Length: 639
Ligand code: RUQ
Ligand code: CUA
Ligand code: CA
Image 1 (cartoon, rainbow, N blue to C red):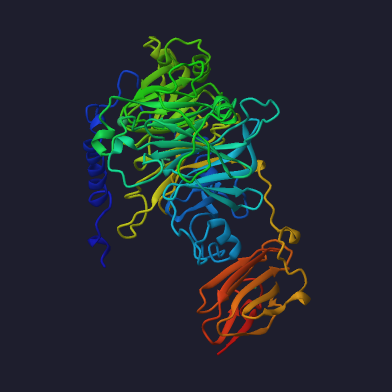
Image 2: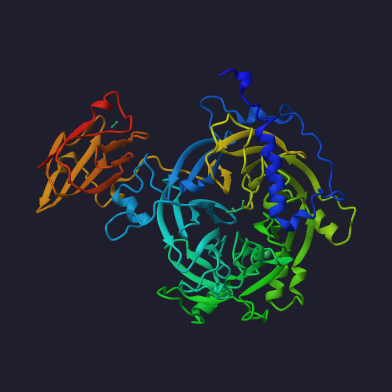
Protein backbone atom coordinates (compact mmCIF):
# COMPACT_ATOMS: atom_id res chain seq x y z
CA UNK A 1 0.00 0.00 0.00
CA UNK A 2 1.15 3.50 -0.72
CA UNK A 3 2.24 5.08 2.54
CA UNK A 4 0.36 8.26 1.78
CA UNK A 5 -2.89 6.34 1.75
CA UNK A 6 -2.47 5.25 5.32
CA UNK A 7 -4.32 7.23 7.93
CA UNK A 8 -2.12 9.49 9.98
CA UNK A 9 -2.70 8.44 13.56
CA UNK A 10 -2.45 11.89 15.13
CA UNK A 11 -4.85 13.53 12.78
CA UNK A 12 -7.55 10.93 12.43
CA UNK A 13 -8.34 7.93 14.55
CA UNK A 14 -6.21 8.57 17.53
CA UNK A 15 -7.09 12.16 18.25
CA UNK A 16 -10.71 11.39 17.66
CA UNK A 17 -10.41 8.58 20.13
CA UNK A 18 -8.74 10.71 22.75
CA UNK A 19 -11.49 13.28 22.53
CA UNK A 20 -14.10 10.59 22.54
CA UNK A 21 -12.71 8.96 25.63
CA UNK A 22 -12.51 12.16 27.58
CA UNK A 23 -16.01 13.12 26.64
CA UNK A 24 -17.42 9.69 27.28
CA UNK A 25 -15.66 9.43 30.58
CA UNK A 26 -16.97 12.78 31.71
CA UNK A 27 -20.51 11.91 30.75
CA UNK A 28 -20.23 8.58 32.50
CA UNK A 29 -18.71 10.06 35.60
CA UNK A 30 -21.55 12.43 36.32
CA UNK A 31 -19.87 13.58 39.49
CA UNK A 32 -16.99 15.22 37.71
CA UNK A 33 -18.92 16.55 34.76
CA UNK A 34 -19.54 19.70 36.73
CA UNK A 35 -15.86 20.49 37.15
CA UNK A 36 -14.34 20.26 33.71
CA UNK A 37 -12.17 23.30 34.37
CA UNK A 38 -8.80 22.46 35.70
CA UNK A 39 -8.19 23.76 39.19
CA UNK A 40 -6.81 27.22 38.74
CA UNK A 41 -6.16 29.05 41.98
CA UNK A 42 -3.73 26.48 43.27
CA UNK A 43 -2.05 25.47 40.08
CA UNK A 44 1.46 26.36 39.18
CA UNK A 45 1.67 26.71 35.39
CA UNK A 46 2.76 23.49 33.72
CA UNK A 47 6.19 24.65 32.69
CA UNK A 48 7.66 22.92 29.72
CA UNK A 49 9.93 20.13 30.84
CA UNK A 50 13.66 20.70 30.58
CA UNK A 51 15.32 18.94 27.69
CA UNK A 52 15.99 15.34 28.53
CA UNK A 53 19.71 15.89 28.06
CA UNK A 54 19.76 18.40 30.92
CA UNK A 55 19.26 15.61 33.41
CA UNK A 56 20.83 12.57 31.83
CA UNK A 57 17.48 12.13 30.15
CA UNK A 58 16.97 9.57 27.45
CA UNK A 59 20.52 8.34 27.70
CA UNK A 60 19.92 7.28 31.27
CA UNK A 61 17.16 4.85 30.31
CA UNK A 62 19.18 3.44 27.44
CA UNK A 63 21.60 0.84 28.71
CA UNK A 64 24.55 -0.09 26.62
CA UNK A 65 24.85 -3.75 25.66
CA UNK A 66 25.88 -5.72 28.71
CA UNK A 67 24.86 -3.04 31.21
CA UNK A 68 22.48 -4.05 33.95
CA UNK A 69 19.50 -2.21 35.29
CA UNK A 70 19.72 -0.78 38.78
CA UNK A 71 16.12 -1.46 39.85
CA UNK A 72 13.72 -4.35 39.71
CA UNK A 73 10.12 -3.71 38.81
CA UNK A 74 7.40 -6.22 39.65
CA UNK A 75 4.44 -5.63 37.38
CA UNK A 76 1.13 -7.38 37.67
CA UNK A 77 0.25 -9.05 34.38
CA UNK A 78 -3.50 -8.51 34.42
CA UNK A 79 -5.30 -10.94 32.13
CA UNK A 80 -2.22 -13.09 31.70
CA UNK A 81 -2.51 -13.93 35.41
CA UNK A 82 1.22 -13.58 36.01
CA UNK A 83 3.74 -11.17 37.46
CA UNK A 84 6.15 -9.56 35.04
CA UNK A 85 9.66 -8.67 36.08
CA UNK A 86 11.09 -5.56 34.48
CA UNK A 87 14.50 -4.04 34.74
CA UNK A 88 14.51 -0.31 35.31
CA UNK A 89 15.26 2.28 34.14
CA UNK A 90 15.49 0.47 30.81
CA UNK A 91 11.96 -0.92 31.06
CA UNK A 92 13.08 -4.24 29.60
CA UNK A 93 10.87 -7.18 30.50
CA UNK A 94 13.18 -9.84 31.92
CA UNK A 95 10.78 -12.60 32.84
CA UNK A 96 7.22 -13.48 33.71
CA UNK A 97 6.26 -15.45 36.79
CA UNK A 98 3.15 -17.50 36.06
CA UNK A 99 0.66 -17.69 38.92
CA UNK A 100 -3.02 -18.10 38.05
CA UNK A 101 -2.87 -18.94 34.35
CA UNK A 102 -1.04 -21.83 32.64
CA UNK A 103 2.23 -20.84 31.00
CA UNK A 104 3.56 -22.69 27.99
CA UNK A 105 7.20 -21.77 28.47
CA UNK A 106 7.78 -23.32 31.86
CA UNK A 107 4.88 -25.77 31.85
CA UNK A 108 2.96 -24.01 34.58
CA UNK A 109 -0.36 -25.80 34.80
CA UNK A 110 1.17 -28.83 33.02
CA UNK A 111 3.50 -30.21 35.70
CA UNK A 112 2.06 -31.95 38.76
CA UNK A 113 3.95 -29.56 41.03
CA UNK A 114 2.44 -26.41 39.50
CA UNK A 115 -1.04 -27.97 39.22
CA UNK A 116 -0.96 -28.71 42.93
CA UNK A 117 -0.25 -25.02 43.64
CA UNK A 118 -2.90 -23.83 41.16
CA UNK A 119 -5.56 -26.23 42.43
CA UNK A 120 -7.22 -29.10 40.57
CA UNK A 121 -10.65 -30.66 40.27
CA UNK A 122 -11.35 -34.29 41.18
CA UNK A 123 -10.36 -35.41 37.67
CA UNK A 124 -6.96 -33.75 38.00
CA UNK A 125 -7.69 -30.89 35.61
CA UNK A 126 -7.12 -27.29 36.67
CA UNK A 127 -9.86 -25.61 38.67
CA UNK A 128 -9.32 -22.33 36.83
CA UNK A 129 -7.34 -21.38 33.75
CA UNK A 130 -7.91 -17.65 33.76
CA UNK A 131 -6.83 -14.84 36.04
CA UNK A 132 -6.98 -11.10 36.53
CA UNK A 133 -4.05 -9.86 38.56
CA UNK A 134 -4.07 -6.23 39.67
CA UNK A 135 -1.80 -5.56 42.59
CA UNK A 136 1.69 -6.76 43.44
CA UNK A 137 3.31 -5.98 46.76
CA UNK A 138 6.37 -7.38 48.49
CA UNK A 139 7.21 -8.31 52.07
CA UNK A 140 8.75 -5.72 54.38
CA UNK A 141 11.30 -5.56 57.15
CA UNK A 142 12.08 -2.33 58.99
CA UNK A 143 9.89 -0.48 56.52
CA UNK A 144 11.75 -1.62 53.42
CA UNK A 145 11.43 -4.65 51.15
CA UNK A 146 13.24 -7.68 52.55
CA UNK A 147 13.31 -9.82 49.41
CA UNK A 148 11.38 -12.76 50.85
CA UNK A 149 8.03 -12.69 49.12
CA UNK A 150 5.72 -10.85 46.80
CA UNK A 151 1.97 -11.31 46.60
CA UNK A 152 -0.49 -10.73 43.81
CA UNK A 153 -4.28 -10.92 43.70
CA UNK A 154 -6.62 -12.61 41.24
CA UNK A 155 -9.74 -10.54 41.12
CA UNK A 156 -11.86 -13.05 39.19
CA UNK A 157 -11.60 -16.04 41.46
CA UNK A 158 -10.61 -14.32 44.72
CA UNK A 159 -7.19 -15.89 44.97
CA UNK A 160 -3.94 -14.63 46.39
CA UNK A 161 -0.65 -15.99 45.07
CA UNK A 162 2.67 -15.80 46.85
CA UNK A 163 5.94 -15.52 44.97
CA UNK A 164 9.24 -16.61 46.47
CA UNK A 165 11.69 -13.92 45.53
CA UNK A 166 14.70 -16.23 45.94
CA UNK A 167 13.64 -18.27 42.89
CA UNK A 168 11.02 -15.95 41.33
CA UNK A 169 8.37 -18.66 41.44
CA UNK A 170 4.85 -18.85 42.78
CA UNK A 171 4.80 -21.33 45.66
CA UNK A 172 1.31 -20.96 47.13
CA UNK A 173 -2.15 -19.89 46.09
CA UNK A 174 -5.03 -19.39 48.52
CA UNK A 175 -8.67 -18.85 47.62
CA UNK A 176 -10.47 -16.44 49.95
CA UNK A 177 -13.76 -17.81 51.27
CA UNK A 178 -16.97 -15.84 50.74
CA UNK A 179 -15.25 -13.11 48.74
CA UNK A 180 -16.06 -11.96 45.23
CA UNK A 181 -14.01 -9.40 43.33
CA UNK A 182 -10.89 -9.53 45.51
CA UNK A 183 -9.19 -6.28 44.61
CA UNK A 184 -6.79 -4.42 46.90
CA UNK A 185 -3.92 -6.18 48.60
CA UNK A 186 -1.21 -4.99 50.96
CA UNK A 187 1.17 -6.73 53.38
CA UNK A 188 1.54 -5.30 56.85
CA UNK A 189 4.91 -3.74 57.58
CA UNK A 190 5.37 -4.97 61.15
CA UNK A 191 3.37 -6.33 64.05
CA UNK A 192 1.13 -3.85 65.89
CA UNK A 193 1.95 -5.35 69.30
CA UNK A 194 5.10 -7.46 69.32
CA UNK A 195 8.17 -5.19 69.23
CA UNK A 196 10.38 -7.94 67.89
CA UNK A 197 8.28 -8.60 64.82
CA UNK A 198 9.48 -5.83 62.55
CA UNK A 199 8.58 -7.63 59.33
CA UNK A 200 5.54 -8.70 57.34
CA UNK A 201 3.42 -11.46 58.86
CA UNK A 202 0.01 -10.64 57.37
CA UNK A 203 -1.42 -9.71 54.02
CA UNK A 204 -4.69 -7.78 53.84
CA UNK A 205 -7.14 -8.35 51.04
CA UNK A 206 -10.14 -6.21 50.10
CA UNK A 207 -13.38 -7.77 48.84
CA UNK A 208 -14.92 -5.43 46.30
CA UNK A 209 -18.28 -6.97 45.44
CA UNK A 210 -20.98 -7.52 48.05
CA UNK A 211 -22.67 -10.90 47.92
CA UNK A 212 -25.06 -12.94 50.07
CA UNK A 213 -23.04 -14.52 52.89
CA UNK A 214 -22.95 -17.43 52.36
CA UNK A 215 -23.58 -17.06 48.65
CA UNK A 216 -27.12 -18.00 47.62
CA UNK A 217 -29.50 -16.79 44.92
CA UNK A 218 -30.93 -13.90 46.95
CA UNK A 219 -32.30 -11.02 44.89
CA UNK A 220 -32.56 -8.45 47.68
CA UNK A 221 -29.17 -6.76 47.41
CA UNK A 222 -29.57 -4.93 50.70
CA UNK A 223 -28.67 -8.24 52.31
CA UNK A 224 -25.31 -8.48 50.50
CA UNK A 225 -22.08 -7.76 52.35
CA UNK A 226 -18.32 -7.57 51.71
CA UNK A 227 -15.43 -8.94 53.74
CA UNK A 228 -11.94 -7.66 54.47
CA UNK A 229 -9.56 -10.60 54.77
CA UNK A 230 -6.26 -11.21 56.57
CA UNK A 231 -3.99 -13.96 55.19
CA UNK A 232 -1.00 -15.31 57.11
CA UNK A 233 2.17 -14.41 55.22
CA UNK A 234 3.96 -17.66 56.08
CA UNK A 235 1.28 -20.35 56.02
CA UNK A 236 -0.91 -18.54 53.50
CA UNK A 237 -3.93 -19.63 55.53
CA UNK A 238 -6.74 -17.16 55.99
CA UNK A 239 -6.45 -15.86 59.56
CA UNK A 240 -9.61 -13.80 59.91
CA UNK A 241 -12.14 -11.69 58.08
CA UNK A 242 -14.06 -8.55 58.92
CA UNK A 243 -17.67 -8.08 57.94
CA UNK A 244 -18.10 -4.49 56.75
CA UNK A 245 -20.63 -2.03 55.42
CA UNK A 246 -19.94 -0.80 51.91
CA UNK A 247 -17.15 -2.33 49.85
CA UNK A 248 -13.37 -2.53 49.67
CA UNK A 249 -11.29 -1.25 46.79
CA UNK A 250 -7.57 -0.57 47.31
CA UNK A 251 -5.69 -1.35 50.51
CA UNK A 252 -2.93 0.39 52.47
CA UNK A 253 -1.04 -0.36 55.70
CA UNK A 254 0.74 1.85 58.22
CA UNK A 255 4.43 1.55 59.05
CA UNK A 256 3.71 0.82 62.73
CA UNK A 257 1.52 -2.16 61.83
CA UNK A 258 -1.41 -0.72 63.74
CA UNK A 259 -3.66 0.32 60.88
CA UNK A 260 -4.85 -0.97 57.56
CA UNK A 261 -7.34 0.86 55.38
CA UNK A 262 -9.39 0.43 52.26
CA UNK A 263 -11.09 3.09 50.19
CA UNK A 264 -14.80 2.55 49.62
CA UNK A 265 -16.58 3.78 46.52
CA UNK A 266 -19.83 2.02 47.22
CA UNK A 267 -20.85 3.04 50.72
CA UNK A 268 -24.31 3.23 49.19
CA UNK A 269 -24.17 -0.56 48.80
CA UNK A 270 -25.88 -0.02 45.48
CA UNK A 271 -26.36 -2.89 43.07
CA UNK A 272 -26.56 -0.59 40.07
CA UNK A 273 -24.08 1.81 38.54
CA UNK A 274 -26.12 4.94 39.31
CA UNK A 275 -26.78 3.88 42.89
CA UNK A 276 -23.05 3.50 43.53
CA UNK A 277 -22.60 7.17 42.67
CA UNK A 278 -25.61 8.58 44.44
CA UNK A 279 -23.95 9.75 47.66
CA UNK A 280 -21.80 12.88 47.74
CA UNK A 281 -19.23 11.20 49.95
CA UNK A 282 -17.95 7.69 50.49
CA UNK A 283 -15.33 6.48 52.93
CA UNK A 284 -11.83 5.39 53.73
CA UNK A 285 -12.35 2.52 56.14
CA UNK A 286 -9.71 1.92 58.83
CA UNK A 287 -9.07 -1.36 60.61
CA UNK A 288 -7.54 -1.51 64.09
CA UNK A 289 -5.41 -4.61 63.65
CA UNK A 290 -4.47 -5.27 67.28
CA UNK A 291 -8.11 -5.04 68.36
CA UNK A 292 -9.29 -7.35 65.59
CA UNK A 293 -6.65 -9.92 66.54
CA UNK A 294 -7.73 -9.62 70.20
CA UNK A 295 -11.40 -10.08 69.30
CA UNK A 296 -10.54 -13.20 67.30
CA UNK A 297 -8.49 -14.53 70.23
CA UNK A 298 -11.36 -13.84 72.61
CA UNK A 299 -13.73 -15.81 70.40
CA UNK A 300 -15.82 -12.76 69.46
CA UNK A 301 -16.59 -13.94 65.96
CA UNK A 302 -18.88 -16.00 63.83
CA UNK A 303 -18.24 -18.17 60.81
CA UNK A 304 -19.97 -18.10 57.45
CA UNK A 305 -21.28 -21.17 55.66
CA UNK A 306 -18.76 -23.97 55.27
CA UNK A 307 -15.80 -21.69 56.02
CA UNK A 308 -14.14 -22.04 59.43
CA UNK A 309 -12.46 -18.63 59.21
CA UNK A 310 -13.33 -16.32 62.14
CA UNK A 311 -15.36 -13.32 60.98
CA UNK A 312 -15.52 -10.29 63.30
CA UNK A 313 -18.17 -7.61 63.04
CA UNK A 314 -16.79 -4.43 61.52
CA UNK A 315 -20.10 -2.84 60.55
CA UNK A 316 -20.81 0.73 61.59
CA UNK A 317 -23.63 -0.18 63.94
CA UNK A 318 -21.37 -2.50 65.93
CA UNK A 319 -18.46 -0.05 66.16
CA UNK A 320 -19.88 3.21 67.46
CA UNK A 321 -17.73 3.46 70.58
CA UNK A 322 -14.21 4.52 69.55
CA UNK A 323 -12.69 2.85 72.59
CA UNK A 324 -13.80 -0.61 71.51
CA UNK A 325 -14.23 -0.06 67.77
CA UNK A 326 -12.52 -2.42 65.36
CA UNK A 327 -13.18 -0.11 62.43
CA UNK A 328 -13.52 3.58 61.64
CA UNK A 329 -15.35 4.90 58.58
CA UNK A 330 -13.72 8.19 57.58
CA UNK A 331 -15.87 10.19 55.19
CA UNK A 332 -14.05 11.15 51.96
CA UNK A 333 -15.31 12.62 48.68
CA UNK A 334 -17.41 10.67 46.20
CA UNK A 335 -16.20 7.32 44.82
CA UNK A 336 -12.54 7.51 45.82
CA UNK A 337 -9.93 5.27 44.25
CA UNK A 338 -6.54 4.36 45.62
CA UNK A 339 -5.20 4.78 49.10
CA UNK A 340 -1.45 5.11 49.55
CA UNK A 341 0.85 5.43 52.57
CA UNK A 342 3.39 8.25 52.56
CA UNK A 343 6.96 7.08 53.18
CA UNK A 344 7.32 9.27 56.29
CA UNK A 345 4.69 7.04 57.88
CA UNK A 346 2.39 9.95 58.70
CA UNK A 347 -0.37 9.94 56.13
CA UNK A 348 -2.68 7.90 53.95
CA UNK A 349 -3.72 9.63 50.77
CA UNK A 350 -7.03 8.83 49.20
CA UNK A 351 -7.51 9.89 45.58
CA UNK A 352 -10.88 11.31 44.64
CA UNK A 353 -11.67 9.70 41.26
CA UNK A 354 -15.13 11.28 40.86
CA UNK A 355 -14.01 14.23 42.92
CA UNK A 356 -11.02 16.25 41.67
CA UNK A 357 -9.41 16.04 45.09
CA UNK A 358 -6.79 14.28 47.13
CA UNK A 359 -7.59 13.63 50.78
CA UNK A 360 -4.77 13.51 53.32
CA UNK A 361 -5.54 11.53 56.48
CA UNK A 362 -3.19 11.84 59.46
CA UNK A 363 -2.64 8.40 60.97
CA UNK A 364 -1.70 9.65 64.45
CA UNK A 365 -5.14 11.23 64.61
CA UNK A 366 -6.84 8.01 63.57
CA UNK A 367 -5.08 6.30 66.48
CA UNK A 368 -6.16 9.18 68.76
CA UNK A 369 -9.75 8.57 67.70
CA UNK A 370 -9.46 4.88 68.56
CA UNK A 371 -8.06 5.93 71.95
CA UNK A 372 -11.06 8.18 72.56
CA UNK A 373 -8.85 11.30 72.40
CA UNK A 374 -10.37 12.81 69.27
CA UNK A 375 -13.91 14.03 69.41
CA UNK A 376 -14.79 14.06 65.73
CA UNK A 377 -13.56 11.37 63.38
CA UNK A 378 -13.72 13.90 60.52
CA UNK A 379 -10.79 15.79 61.99
CA UNK A 380 -8.40 13.01 60.95
CA UNK A 381 -8.57 14.69 57.52
CA UNK A 382 -5.83 17.29 57.40
CA UNK A 383 -6.20 18.19 53.75
CA UNK A 384 -8.73 17.81 51.00
CA UNK A 385 -7.34 19.69 48.04
CA UNK A 386 -8.03 19.97 44.34
CA UNK A 387 -5.56 18.12 42.14
CA UNK A 388 -7.23 17.75 38.75
CA UNK A 389 -9.72 15.47 37.06
CA UNK A 390 -10.01 11.80 37.89
CA UNK A 391 -7.28 11.30 40.53
CA UNK A 392 -6.55 7.57 40.96
CA UNK A 393 -3.23 6.58 42.52
CA UNK A 394 -0.39 8.30 44.33
CA UNK A 395 3.37 7.76 44.51
CA UNK A 396 5.99 9.50 46.65
CA UNK A 397 9.55 10.77 46.30
CA UNK A 398 10.65 10.72 49.93
CA UNK A 399 11.03 14.51 49.86
CA UNK A 400 7.50 15.28 50.99
CA UNK A 401 5.95 15.30 47.53
CA UNK A 402 3.16 13.17 46.16
CA UNK A 403 2.53 12.27 42.51
CA UNK A 404 -1.05 11.51 41.60
CA UNK A 405 -2.38 10.19 38.30
CA UNK A 406 -5.23 12.17 36.78
CA UNK A 407 -7.13 9.75 34.59
CA UNK A 408 -9.33 12.28 32.84
CA UNK A 409 -6.69 14.96 32.45
CA UNK A 410 -4.13 12.41 31.18
CA UNK A 411 -1.62 13.96 33.52
CA UNK A 412 0.47 13.32 36.57
CA UNK A 413 0.34 16.08 39.16
CA UNK A 414 3.19 16.61 41.59
CA UNK A 415 2.08 18.18 44.84
CA UNK A 416 3.58 18.90 48.21
CA UNK A 417 1.76 17.27 51.10
CA UNK A 418 2.78 19.79 53.79
CA UNK A 419 1.78 22.71 51.56
CA UNK A 420 -1.56 21.03 50.88
CA UNK A 421 -2.14 20.71 54.62
CA UNK A 422 -1.32 24.41 55.08
CA UNK A 423 -3.62 25.38 52.23
CA UNK A 424 -6.41 23.30 53.70
CA UNK A 425 -5.87 24.93 57.08
CA UNK A 426 -6.55 28.34 55.51
CA UNK A 427 -3.22 29.54 54.14
CA UNK A 428 -4.37 30.22 50.59
CA UNK A 429 -0.89 31.37 49.61
CA UNK A 430 0.44 27.85 50.07
CA UNK A 431 1.26 26.60 46.58
CA UNK A 432 0.92 22.89 46.84
CA UNK A 433 0.76 21.95 43.15
CA UNK A 434 4.38 21.98 41.99
CA UNK A 435 4.27 20.48 38.52
CA UNK A 436 2.10 18.73 35.98
CA UNK A 437 3.13 16.52 33.10
CA UNK A 438 1.12 15.08 30.23
CA UNK A 439 1.14 11.29 29.98
CA UNK A 440 -0.22 9.14 27.16
CA UNK A 441 -3.02 8.47 27.92
CA UNK A 442 -5.49 8.03 30.80
CA UNK A 443 -3.08 6.94 33.54
CA UNK A 444 -4.16 4.55 36.29
CA UNK A 445 -1.38 3.27 38.48
CA UNK A 446 1.77 5.15 39.26
CA UNK A 447 4.73 4.24 41.38
CA UNK A 448 8.10 5.69 42.19
CA UNK A 449 11.33 3.89 42.95
CA UNK A 450 11.05 2.55 46.51
CA UNK A 451 7.92 4.72 46.81
CA UNK A 452 5.97 2.99 49.57
CA UNK A 453 8.98 2.23 51.76
CA UNK A 454 11.01 4.27 54.25
CA UNK A 455 13.70 4.33 51.56
CA UNK A 456 11.69 6.19 48.89
CA UNK A 457 14.45 7.66 46.74
CA UNK A 458 12.59 9.87 44.30
CA UNK A 459 14.46 8.83 41.17
CA UNK A 460 12.17 7.02 38.75
CA UNK A 461 8.47 7.36 38.34
CA UNK A 462 6.52 4.89 36.24
CA UNK A 463 3.02 5.51 35.02
CA UNK A 464 0.65 2.87 33.75
CA UNK A 465 -1.22 4.62 30.96
CA UNK A 466 -4.33 2.64 30.12
CA UNK A 467 -4.58 3.83 26.53
CA UNK A 468 -1.67 4.09 24.12
CA UNK A 469 -3.59 5.19 21.00
CA UNK A 470 -1.03 6.79 18.69
CA UNK A 471 2.16 6.04 20.63
CA UNK A 472 3.12 2.80 18.89
CA UNK A 473 2.86 1.24 15.46
CA UNK A 474 -0.75 0.24 14.89
CA UNK A 475 -1.37 -3.49 15.36
CA UNK A 476 -5.07 -3.79 14.74
CA UNK A 477 -7.89 -2.99 17.12
CA UNK A 478 -6.29 -4.12 20.38
CA UNK A 479 -3.76 -1.55 21.45
CA UNK A 480 -1.06 -2.22 24.00
CA UNK A 481 -0.97 -0.13 27.11
CA UNK A 482 1.78 2.38 27.59
CA UNK A 483 4.06 2.18 30.60
CA UNK A 484 5.95 5.44 30.73
CA UNK A 485 9.01 6.28 32.72
CA UNK A 486 9.62 9.71 34.15
CA UNK A 487 12.69 11.19 35.78
CA UNK A 488 11.32 12.53 39.07
CA UNK A 489 14.62 13.60 40.58
CA UNK A 490 14.35 17.32 39.82
CA UNK A 491 11.78 20.07 40.35
CA UNK A 492 10.16 19.27 37.03
CA UNK A 493 9.20 15.81 35.91
CA UNK A 494 10.83 14.70 32.66
CA UNK A 495 9.19 12.07 30.48
CA UNK A 496 11.91 9.69 29.28
CA UNK A 497 10.39 6.73 27.48
CA UNK A 498 7.31 4.83 26.38
CA UNK A 499 7.03 1.06 26.64
CA UNK A 500 4.20 -0.97 25.12
CA UNK A 501 2.85 -3.68 27.40
CA UNK A 502 0.27 -6.32 26.82
CA UNK A 503 -2.93 -5.57 28.74
CA UNK A 504 -3.51 -5.09 31.46
CA UNK A 505 -0.76 -4.60 34.01
CA UNK A 506 -2.44 -2.41 36.64
CA UNK A 507 -0.11 -2.00 39.60
CA UNK A 508 3.63 -2.44 40.12
CA UNK A 509 6.45 -1.77 42.53
CA UNK A 510 10.02 -0.63 41.87
CA UNK A 511 12.93 -1.32 44.18
CA UNK A 512 16.71 -1.35 44.29
CA UNK A 513 18.37 -4.42 42.87
CA UNK A 514 20.54 -4.78 45.98
CA UNK A 515 17.46 -5.84 47.94
CA UNK A 516 17.34 -9.18 46.13
CA UNK A 517 19.81 -11.94 45.62
CA UNK A 518 17.98 -14.53 43.53
CA UNK A 519 19.38 -18.04 43.20
CA UNK A 520 20.09 -19.28 39.73
CA UNK A 521 20.48 -22.98 40.39
CA UNK A 522 18.11 -25.16 42.40
CA UNK A 523 19.12 -27.47 45.22
CA UNK A 524 18.57 -31.15 44.33
CA UNK A 525 17.62 -31.91 47.93
CA UNK A 526 14.67 -29.50 47.81
CA UNK A 527 12.83 -32.00 45.60
CA UNK A 528 11.69 -35.15 47.42
CA UNK A 529 11.03 -36.87 44.09
CA UNK A 530 14.42 -36.00 42.52
CA UNK A 531 16.08 -38.61 40.32
CA UNK A 532 19.55 -37.96 41.65
CA UNK A 533 21.55 -40.28 39.43
CA UNK A 534 21.05 -41.34 35.81
CA UNK A 535 21.36 -44.91 37.10
CA UNK A 536 18.06 -44.45 38.95
CA UNK A 537 16.27 -43.92 35.63
CA UNK A 538 13.92 -46.49 34.21
CA UNK A 539 10.30 -47.60 33.85
CA UNK A 540 8.82 -48.84 37.12
CA UNK A 541 5.53 -50.65 36.78
CA UNK A 542 2.88 -51.66 39.32
CA UNK A 543 0.00 -53.02 37.24
CA UNK A 544 -1.32 -50.15 35.12
CA UNK A 545 0.54 -47.56 37.13
CA UNK A 546 3.85 -46.71 35.58
CA UNK A 547 6.55 -44.38 36.85
CA UNK A 548 9.08 -43.23 34.28
CA UNK A 549 12.17 -41.71 35.89
CA UNK A 550 14.56 -39.70 33.77
CA UNK A 551 17.39 -37.26 34.11
CA UNK A 552 18.73 -34.69 31.69
CA UNK A 553 22.33 -33.71 31.17
CA UNK A 554 23.16 -31.75 28.03
CA UNK A 555 22.70 -32.95 25.38
CA UNK A 556 20.81 -36.10 26.37
CA UNK A 557 18.00 -37.58 28.39
CA UNK A 558 18.99 -40.60 30.49
CA UNK A 559 16.46 -42.82 28.67
CA UNK A 560 17.00 -42.95 24.93
CA UNK A 561 13.80 -44.99 24.61
CA UNK A 562 11.12 -46.61 26.76
CA UNK A 563 7.95 -48.62 26.25
CA UNK A 564 4.44 -48.20 27.65
CA UNK A 565 1.19 -50.07 27.11
CA UNK A 566 -1.97 -48.37 25.91
CA UNK A 567 -4.05 -47.37 28.93
CA UNK A 568 -1.09 -47.06 31.32
CA UNK A 569 -1.44 -44.40 33.99
CA UNK A 570 1.94 -42.75 33.66
CA UNK A 571 3.87 -40.37 35.86
CA UNK A 572 7.07 -39.10 34.29
CA UNK A 573 9.62 -37.48 36.56
CA UNK A 574 12.53 -35.53 35.15
CA UNK A 575 15.49 -34.15 37.09
CA UNK A 576 17.89 -31.81 35.38
CA UNK A 577 21.37 -32.79 36.55
CA UNK A 578 23.03 -29.86 34.80
CA UNK A 579 24.24 -27.63 37.54
CA UNK A 580 25.46 -24.54 35.76
CA UNK A 581 23.31 -21.44 35.53
CA UNK A 582 21.14 -20.85 32.47
CA UNK A 583 21.19 -24.51 31.38
CA UNK A 584 17.53 -25.45 31.27
CA UNK A 585 16.03 -28.32 29.28
CA UNK A 586 12.51 -28.77 28.04
CA UNK A 587 10.54 -31.96 27.68
CA UNK A 588 7.75 -32.16 25.13
CA UNK A 589 5.66 -35.18 24.19
CA UNK A 590 3.94 -34.74 20.82
CA UNK A 591 0.16 -35.29 20.79
CA UNK A 592 0.08 -35.64 24.57
CA UNK A 593 -0.23 -31.93 25.36
CA UNK A 594 2.91 -31.99 27.49
CA UNK A 595 5.70 -29.45 27.52
CA UNK A 596 7.62 -28.16 30.52
CA UNK A 597 11.13 -27.14 31.43
CA UNK A 598 13.53 -28.10 34.18
CA UNK A 599 16.04 -25.52 35.38
CA UNK A 600 19.46 -26.54 36.67
CA UNK A 601 18.99 -29.17 39.42
CA UNK A 602 15.21 -28.83 39.27
CA UNK A 603 12.81 -31.78 39.30
CA UNK A 604 9.36 -31.73 37.73
CA UNK A 605 6.81 -34.38 36.91
CA UNK A 606 3.78 -34.87 34.69
CA UNK A 607 1.01 -37.46 34.77
CA UNK A 608 -0.95 -38.70 31.78
CA UNK A 609 -2.82 -41.71 30.40
CA UNK A 610 -0.97 -43.41 27.56
CA UNK A 611 -4.13 -43.46 25.45
CA UNK A 612 -2.58 -43.12 21.98
CA UNK A 613 -0.51 -46.02 20.65
CA UNK A 614 2.45 -45.27 18.44
CA UNK A 615 5.93 -43.82 18.45
CA UNK A 616 6.35 -40.42 20.10
CA UNK A 617 9.62 -38.55 19.94
CA UNK A 618 10.06 -36.79 23.24
CA UNK A 619 12.30 -33.82 22.53
CA UNK A 620 14.03 -30.99 24.34
CA UNK A 621 12.28 -27.66 23.77
CA UNK A 622 14.84 -25.36 25.32
CA UNK A 623 17.95 -24.65 23.28
CA UNK A 624 20.66 -26.10 25.47
CA UNK A 625 23.57 -27.32 23.40
CA UNK A 626 24.92 -27.63 19.87
CA UNK A 627 23.25 -31.06 19.91
CA UNK A 628 19.95 -29.69 21.25
CA UNK A 629 18.03 -31.04 18.26
CA UNK A 630 19.48 -34.48 18.89
CA UNK A 631 18.34 -34.40 22.53
CA UNK A 632 15.46 -36.85 22.25
CA UNK A 633 13.91 -39.93 23.78
CA UNK A 634 11.65 -42.40 21.99
CA UNK A 635 8.38 -43.26 23.72
CA UNK A 636 6.68 -46.31 22.24
CA UNK A 637 3.11 -46.93 23.34
CA UNK A 638 2.12 -50.49 22.49
CA UNK A 639 -1.46 -51.19 21.44
S1 RUQ B 1 -7.07 -0.52 40.50
S2 RUQ B 1 -6.28 2.01 38.06
CU1 RUQ B 1 -7.38 -2.65 40.10
CU2 RUQ B 1 -5.30 -1.07 40.88
CU3 RUQ B 1 -6.53 1.47 40.19
CU1 CUA C 1 18.26 -29.94 26.22
CU2 CUA C 1 17.72 -28.58 24.42
CA1 CA D 1 -20.28 6.06 45.96
